[in-house]
Image (cartoon, rainbow, N blue to C red):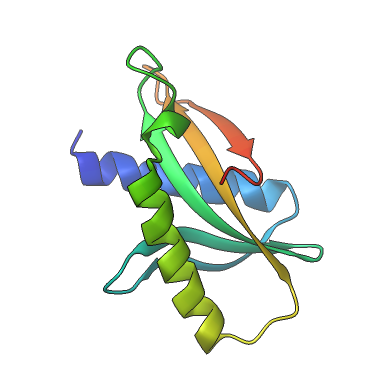
Length: 116
């Protein structure tokens, strides 16, 4: 499967996972010239800027390990842009959602709050 399709599948699974846990999705794939946020979601008093990482397995490292300091900075810059355009009283935080795709097409999802 094409990397973009796998990424889109993972983001869809992550969004489904978050919705089931009471998150309200405010946006997906928010792009700026400086970076991108995969999912922006709200739950309670928190506004989560979520980076989604999809892998077939953890043989080459856990998915969260691929959220490098450079990637974190790009997500922060995109989140800052979103916050300047969308007034909110919510407390922002940065989460990572790992999605592992099983051979049968199933998804194993792990949500890490306050990941960076």
